[in-house]
Length: 422
Ligand code: GDP
Ligand code: IMO
Ligand code: MG
Image 1 (cartoon, rainbow, N blue to C red):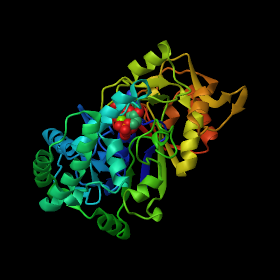
Image 2: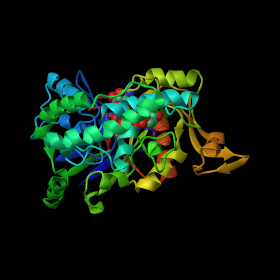
Image 3: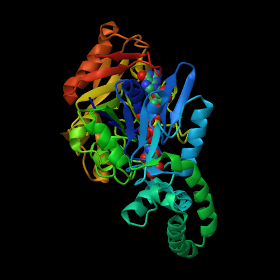
Image 4: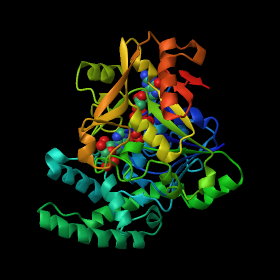
């Protein structure tokens, strides 16, 4: 069975842990969008791995990992991540890690312009990870992007970098900022090319071969449905499609290649960066959840905004991606609370609504309507559904009824073993 794992909220739902669990039932794991803005944490024994670009499946010895064409690859970040993994004893050799020829490269000027635009926006900034993601996807869609396959020919690479830097430097002049040196970038990227080359493949043909030979594929989404450039809280989103459509355009596999879509649902909600968040808790409870859940960004270290679970959001994510299974994470973080709230609708202009308005200004005015649940003692490390406290089961079963999809996985701790399978 080929599964796809995606985030149902604003990212950081615990996709890394769920992918790690499901990797056991797959042969090939593929990332389809995003870039090193992602931070997927997987805890194995006393080791903690943070994956940014490389699929989380890499931690399982006998599996093959693919960085798909829909990903934007920062070679510097890739090389650093590869080194870190190697120092932790992970095999990251080219026979088990491939990068798509068609993936676009993140360039130094992308990172610089990402950061500068944020500064210019001031109060209205998006709160990006400053990894150059937006500008890299902009160049891709403007048809001036530089692709991984361009690394294979120094002349082609040099010509494309020169052309782009010429244009970029005109902008620098306009803004009165320091210009980029094309030759320096060419040298740097030629060195990166030597390190990346063994990993570069035509992954579109490779993945279709895997599919045809009935080997099992696991798609790893980054970010979350509410950060989707089309379906999220635009413009406070990322520049790719973490929802199911991104998996087809981001790998070259046909829709029939996905048998089951798994949405990861954190037992509460978090968001890094700016933008509307109706169930946000700007109080002691929010702080308590942040501390207990260690809700600090895996990529930027920023404190994550925390709030109650928003089921309007989760139901919307399930609708868009045709979700077949749910995976609940961080249930244990809610252990020991007297009461737990769940947002089951919004109040907008004195009316109850159950949808997410497209206009940001409207969404910002939506107030959560809560349903309150009694808390429970402890779910930490529970491995069987029957062993969960009754109140935790009530919480879980309410979510399932509201959303109309069942949990096949419930995570009760960061470790691999702290997992319930149903
Ligand atoms: P991702 O970006 O969706 O992969 O999520 P992150 O890795 O950014 O954030 C999830 C964090 O929660 C990581 O530090 C995980 O190790 C941790 N985590 C995952 N599942 C659980 C769980 O069930 N309980 C607890 N306490 N931590 C978890
Ligand atoms: P994972 O895969 C949470 C957020 C940023 C910002 C917005 C745009 O770990 O769930 P970008 O750098 O993409 O242009 O930033 O998206 N963001 C994430 N938030 N988890 C992520 O990835 C994120 N990747 C980007 O904080 O609000
Ligand atoms: Mg993350």
